[in-house]
Length: 264
Ligand SMILES: [Cu+2]
Image 1: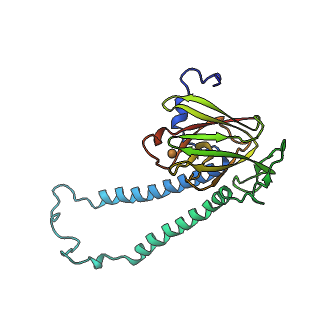
Image 2: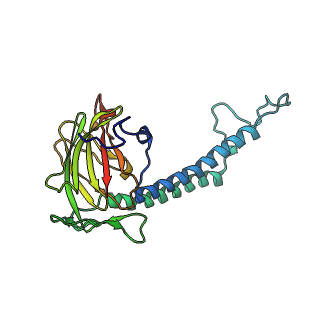
Image 3: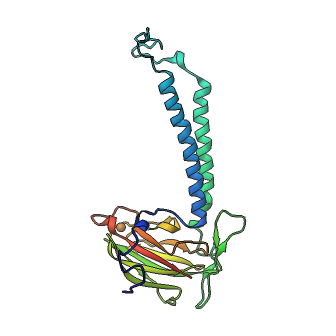
């Protein structure tokens, strides 16, 4: 148990606990794009809603407000109010937007599920070799590496086990950290500029480590081996972030946490 400055009093800084931000370029860019379109769609939908709510409101004391102005009949669809152009527009436009958002999400998915053989991260590093990772020029944050380091993550109710295997402690290390609310949690130390491939499994039920600031998560499944890329870019600004479980796994699911510490 190490006692690093700043961790002694108050444990993990509370602000971190609610900080959901992703600090890797790839997912940050995608996040901004999704927020932008959410605001545009929200403004149109709620603008329309409020406009019509007030525009079609009967004035107080207005004569005729109880008349059937829309000529509605019980059990009959009001086809005389149809507007085919409007209906086509509100079907086609969101459809185009969804296609576009799906398209821009492909690059991060592709990067997240790149192959361990001749993919974005080359092959396994030799002893002493560095991943030397960098953002692919012209991309929105896709990371390329010379090679990667293999680590292991084992999940069980309700904690994580990180194993650096035979990696040098400068590349990968583990510890136990005391974290406010969560109690004792395992800590994983990784290095900026290095890329890791986690071989994962679960001893009981399905779990999923969610590396908050990396923006990635992947299921761990009992009896199966799954993999998760953990490229730590040089551009990553945060030194500490949380690892949570993203698959509901029983009573203590919400406190099944870990801590990721990044060093240079
Ligand atoms: Cu879990």
